[in-house]
Amino acid sequence: MIEIETQMRSAIRDAVNRPSRKPFHWGGLTGYQQLEGIALALHSVAPEAETAYLCRLSMQVDRAVDQNRPLAQDVAGAHLWLTRIADGLRYPPSSFPASGLLGGPVSSDQVRAEMEDLLQQFHPDGSTARLSSPKSELAEV
Image 1 (cartoon, helix red, strand yellow):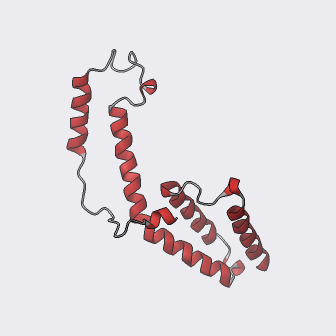
Image 2 (cartoon, helix red, strand yellow):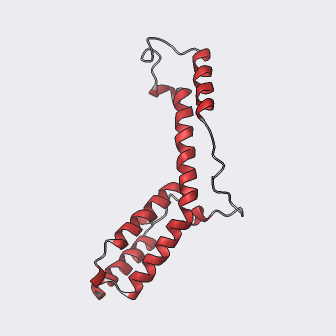
């Protein structure tokens, strides 16, 4: 039991202290996904191997994941819509050769029609997370 805790403490200390292995170097959605992975790893520890340290660590990680889930979902949704818009605008241009799409170059009327279709599909539900302070909890993750 103590061996797992020692390895866990060492891994956390190692990740924090090595510049090439910063645990939340990217922050935002990637940092949140990394935190979710840590939570899954902590939950996979055998119950007989758990110590008070691992229990507390698991509770803190779970709390951070739960508190930031709505923000992460909002960011993921925004990323999806931005990707759809970028695809409709054929950005970056190198990803959309002019001769490869629908037999020829894309007209501005076609792009406008596609953007109007996207606007028709976009229905925000008003349940997105609102930040009460300028400092986002997701940024802390």
